[in-house]
Amino acid sequence: MTENTPSKVNMEKIVSLSRRRGFIFPSSEIYGGLSSCWDYGPLGVELKRNVKEAWWRTMVQQRDDMVGMDASILMHPKTWEASGHLSGFSDPLVECKSCHQRWRADDLEGDRCPSCGGELTEPRLFNLMFKTFMGPVEDDAGVVYLRPETAQGMFVNFQNVLNTTRKRLPFGIAQIGKSFRNEITTGNFIFRSREFEQMEIEFFVKPGTDEEWFDYWLEERLNWYVKFGVNREHLRLREHGKEELSHYSRRTVDINYLFPMGWSELEGIANRGDFDLTQHASFSGKDLSYFDEETKEHIVPYVIEPSAGVDRPVLAFLCDAYDEEPDKDDIRVVLRFHPAIAPYKAAVLPLSRRQPLVEMASEIYAGLRQCWTVTYDDAQSVGRRYRRQDEIGTPFCVTVDFKSLEDHQVTIRERDSMNQIRVPVGELQNTLQAKLDGEDLFVLPPGGQIWLEANKEE
Ligand code: GAP
Image 1 (cartoon, rainbow, N blue to C red):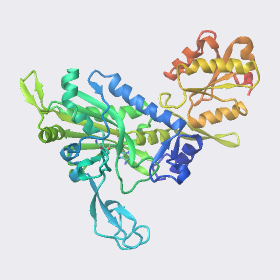
Image 2 (cartoon, protein in one colour):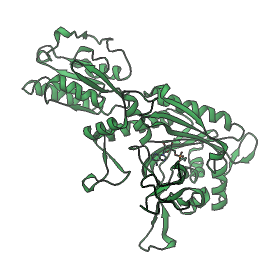
Image 3 (cartoon, protein in one colour):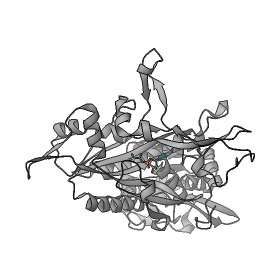
Image 4 (tube, rainbow, N blue to C red):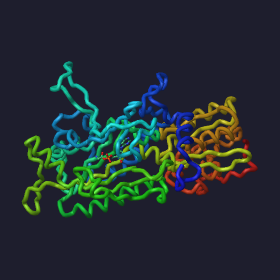
């Protein structure tokens, strides 16, 4: 933990909670795991889907100037010549002459092996693209690459999208999908892995308006993280110096997050100018220009690219949501997820496993399942069940008690405040929807009441 990180969270706690509660497991764990590959478990897959959903809804569904697509991972090998990845997508690699461990030269502080102190080789460039073969013959003609970014699938489809959607500038193409990089050094849990997902936008604009759009997208993307629960103080912008700009970029600003290991990149916003469309036009021999109706000229649009991972935002949402507070003699661990990000929106808890309580709780559970991802828990005391739901970030618990059988009411307990209200079963769905949308817990539906400590049957 660095001196600036939120004091209650560290990577060990996040990794342990993720493992213990079924968010994220090491890949192929029964065989000893596979370095830097991770499997999302039952809760992790919901969390990750929610992050992607929140991005797609805001960036595509709710906008008039964005369309989505889903390109294949394997692309024509010329793509990577044109994009510059074949010649330029490499890191300097050194090898220890004693223990043969390999390191990224630019990660090292001294000139000796950090592991055994041995002498290092001279740096050589190591291309980060995974290579494989298409078809049954493993020769040079069959070489293809697993894409190292989703971006190129959108550039090569620029004319297809333009022709089929009749979009006019400015407009964007958005895509979510897997990318692969044979990173030399990985680590910090899901922060840097060899197989990961990206959520990328290529936003096409008229040259000359690119700087304005760059600022616009920086603000939009920053606001997106804050809207879905990341503390603004844990986000910071970092402008790339001229010497570190990627070969395609005129300007890049990273959105950094205060991860447990310190400030690190969450997302990058780049002004790619006309680099990609010009390169693909030249390598493919196809016209990738845009006819500007106003000036009656063919132009090559500039591109602003907000490029986020999925796994890094997942880690940031987990770290930012993590909280601990004293609870009698113990500590209450709470993931204070925004409701849109939380894996389960609600948990249904029958106070006992006896009939007819179980029947009533099961019916309520079946009804809520039609609206949201919810869970059901009838094991141990209700107090322990609340703690279990707190620890996985479930915003609301719905408790069915013996009184419910008589008055057809249930209690709703809010994760963050632990306050409770009691509402008629017929009002439950609408009330939960309103609370998930941000309504104050104590705004009551018809027949609802604030549920006081004295009334509880815990
Ligand atoms: N198309 C531009 C591009 O790919 P990048 O900065 O190399 O730019 C964008 O990657 C984002 O993808 C990063 O900000 C990060 O969130 C995610 N990312 C990149 N490499 C990653 C890795 N090895 N593991 C996890 N996420 C990664």
